[in-house]
Image (cartoon, rainbow, N blue to C red; front, side, top):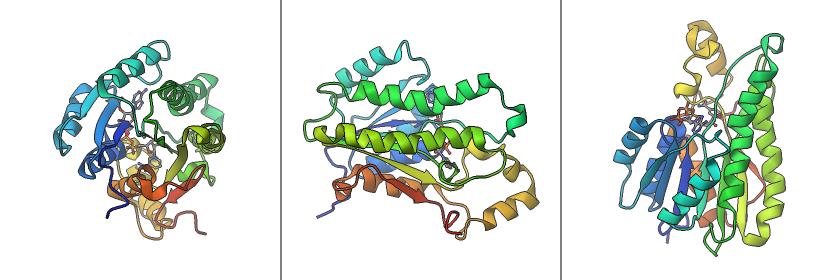
Length: 252
Ligand SMILES: NC(=O)c1ccc[n+]([C@@H]2O[C@H](COP(=O)([O-])OP(=O)(O)OC[C@H]3O[C@@H](n4cnc5c(N)ncnc54)[C@H](OP(=O)(O)O)[C@@H]3O)[C@@H](O)[C@H]2O)c1
């Protein structure tokens, strides 16, 4: 008996061309899932695909902020791969920027990439017969920055906080379809998304920032393991929650 098994499940993983999303796709395949990989970069998607275990996995180059073509692309993906058992929406962008130099255009870009993309993808995937009749699990990627504050993080924080709020209401909306909706909120995991952040560039800042994580910076598998739980039947009674995985960052 393995309540965490993903055998027989088809899981759509966005952001699968890099970092946490790539790790999640690989680890879901190792747990028995058929994975559908989504992102824009073809070469990196192919690289992730080559590391997946088992058969039947596919990748699709999709810009999740192209809202005009997204409905048709989702329709085609599900027509080719069959109905979904889960969505792991890892795709996202980040920055560190004080409000005084943040523009309305940049806010628009961040909301499109981090929030509206998530909602439009969910909307398309939850149309009739696009999830298996047993229902399933949707996991959004928020961040500790959606839960606590940090100087110059307001732009990123507001988009990640929005996902936590949206997931609670979507959990109510989709409960009748037996589709659970949760968030994960990682602390710092070293991936391309934060390699240019000030705390990664300056060795002194990096030591200070890592010390805020009581257990040090995380690894991509720390997050993929939590996602496997939320996608599996082990979490069948969990919905509308935000699972913080941060090595103790938010404890104090
Ligand atoms: N790493 C951390 O410390 C950390 C902490 C907290 C939360 N998170 C969250 O975890 C998630 C994964 O982050 P990561 O660290 O794995 O970052 P990453 O390595 O930079 O990966 C980001 C992924 O998002 C995809 N993406 C971005 N914009 C897209 C778009 N318009 N359409 C389709 N795909 C798009 C990228 O693919 P393409 O460029 O190929 O399109 C890439 O695969 C993000 O939501 C991030 O906010 C990360």
